[in-house]
Each structure stands twice: as structure tokens, then as C-alpha cells.
Length: 156
Ligand SMILES: CC(C)(COP(=O)(O)OP(=O)(O)OC[C@H]1O[C@@H](n2cnc3c(N)ncnc32)[C@H](O)[C@@H]1OP(=O)(O)O)[C@@H](O)C(=O)NCCC(=O)NCCS
Figure 1 (tube, rainbow, N blue to C red):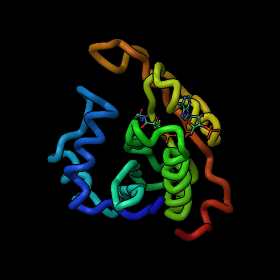
Figure 2: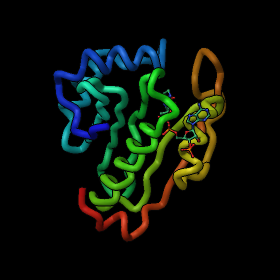
Figure 3: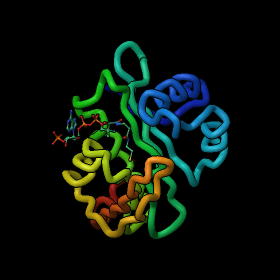
């Protein structure tokens, strides 16, 4: 596995992975271009498998004392093999190195796999937005992880 920064040449592949991961809620190419244009406040990383195929990606918004996870997804064929954890660890370290004291994220209440990943990596539920995801009417769960001093000073 190789972890590196997102490049514009990855966008076609990301659109494909988004469809597989989020269906009707998937980001399209214009959204990805806008996210790239929002660097350095936004930071996206990808994981490649052999031979140089993107199998996962994740992104961060870090504008101050609190950073937000923008997205995280792994190719269905590569899920369950630790890629999600590698990506989440990278976001935690990047947020800390930018001086954030906490990392926030929002997840669908019915996304058991993602919630398990977050809970095992130190995130706790801080609030719930009822029926936030429409038209399904699924709650959004807001989770937070405090960033330790060691993470805040570790370089990337
Ligand atoms: C959520 C997601 C990113 C996890 O990625 P992943 O590469 O499968 O995760 P990992 O292999 O690193 O596993 C990390 C944890 O996730 C959970 N997990 C992984 N595969 C699982 C499975 N098949 N069943 C249940 N839980 C699973 C486990 O808790 C695991 O912890 P462990 O390492 O202690 O076993 C991935 O499932 C995904 O892309 N889902 C679709 C997009 C999405 O929902 N993104 C999150 C939006 S908030």
C-alpha cells in the first residue's frame, strides 16, 4: 500500500469509487475539482495498491482549532483489509500537525462499518441530527476525537 496526496489525475477514479461507496449521494467531478481548488485548507490523500491503482481516499478540512473529516471511502473489493484505518490515522496525524485540538466527523446512523472504524479509533458520539439524510430519513451522528499532544506535534 502506498499513501500519497491526491492529484487531479485521480479524479476519474475517485468519481468511480464515489459511486460505489455513496450511490445517489456521490460527489461528481466538479465537486472534486472544487475540493482540490480549496487546498491547502482542504487536504486529501489516497491509498494505492499494486500496480498504482487507487483503492481508497480521505479528506480533511482544517481551518482552526477543530478539523473535520470531509470524506473517507475504500473500494468495496479492498474493504476489511485495513485501508480505512490507514486513511483515518493519516487524517488524525495531519489534523494534529496543523494544530487542531479535535477532529469531527458526521456519519449515517445506519453505517455500522464506518461507525465501528471510528469507535475503535477513539471517536465518541457528541450529538445526533434527527432524520438528516433524506429522502431516507436516517439520522446523522456527529463524532469527535480529541487529539493528544503527541499527535499535535508529530510531523507528517
Ligand atoms: C467505512 C470504510 C471506509 C472502512 O474501510 P475499510 O478499509 O473496510 O476498514 P478497515 O479494513 O481499515 O477496518 C477498520 C475497522 O472497520 C470495521 N470493519 C472493516 N471491515 C468490516 C466488515 N467487513 N464488517 C464489519 N466491520 C468491518 C472494523 O471495526 C475494523 O476494525 P478492526 O481493524 O479492529 O477489525 C469502508 O467500509 C467504506 O468505504 N465504506 C463506504 C463509504 C463510507 O461509508 N464511508 C464513511 C462515510 S462516514
